[in-house]
Amino acid sequence: MLNKPGLVQKTNIYRIHPETLGLGYGFLGVLGFSLTLPATRVAVVDLSPTFVGLGRAVVASILAVLVLWVTRQPLPHSKYWSSLLVVTGGVVLGFPLLSAWAMQQLPATHGAVVIGLIPLATAIAATIKGRERPSAQFWFASVFGSTTVVLFAFTSGTGQIQMADLILLGAVVAAAIGYAQGGHLAQILGGWQVICWALVIALPILLIPVSYTVFQHPLVASWSAWLGFSYLSIFSQFLAFFAWYHGMGISGVARVSQLQLLQPFLTIIFSNLLLDEQITLSMLVASGIVITSIALGKKALIKRAI
Image (cartoon, rainbow, N blue to C red; front, side, top):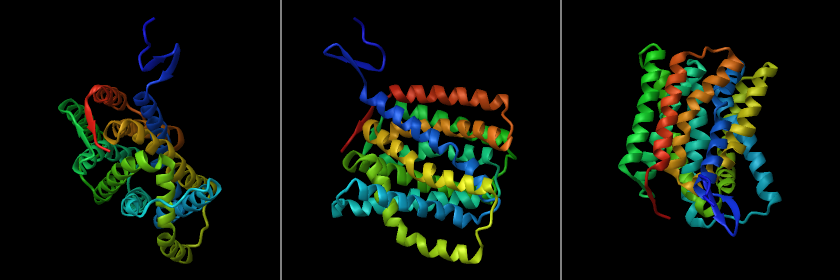
């Protein structure tokens, strides 16, 4: 009997191939992240961007403390704490805060396209750290997909770089470093443990600026703003990372990171549904090209070092 694609036969029982499983978890993470910019856009209408960017991590940190306590997780070895600090700075502090500031001035659809540079930046970060060595085919696919995203941004936008774009590029760099470091740690500590410990580390750092922001700007907001903030706290900053880092731990940082090339287009769809932002033919064409680049990258050879 012939094996089905993506499955491995063992004692007449089919199981999902580990790489396919890792990509599946990665896609669930991307799906959770895809609502981040629309939710941020809704939240910052009434709430301070500092509160939205950092306050969401405070809520997620409390959830992380509860999960670690209930599951009785031991403290990670001291040699991993510096790496956890990098994850904290990238995905708990840097990306949420910078993206919240940028989304005060940019439409969610425009921001989504800039965020589409994260996969290439993450693959570069993983390579610089010496953890992975993607093949030429992988780099071709990644650059091809990222170039499509950038060209789409310029043809669908103003064709100019704004200060908010530069801030969002800073968010891209922060996310890429945090993803690359967290993806490696997930192979050792486990995917959900990585984000939980990173959030715990961040909690004492976050309390001061968040408390000051609440004192300066009373938390009076519409139900939609609070709904957006709740999504950011529970899903974008917490649960989506469970799947994302677990997928990276299974299939590698560079390969799984390429799934985020889909995020701009998923975000555009959600922006249309939630914010009534327009979907165009060019978006659909670009998304088709990006999906092709992901398929090419999936077949490419990537050497991994533990």
